[in-house]
Image (cartoon, rainbow, N blue to C red; front, side, top):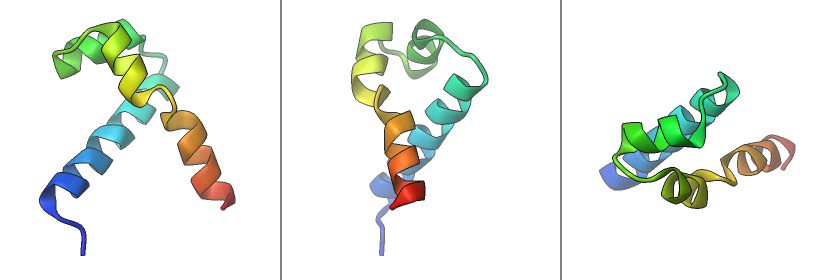
Length: 57
């Protein structure tokens, strides 16, 4: 069973992916998370490829 922190992380990842698909910049996403664009990109930049791998895997 996933704990609350794991579920929260999954929710944030899903929101970042949705924002990127909707055309949001890393700067906008970072601002929403309270981090820099570079920090957001570093932390979530592979979200799209990870999601694609999960669908194919």
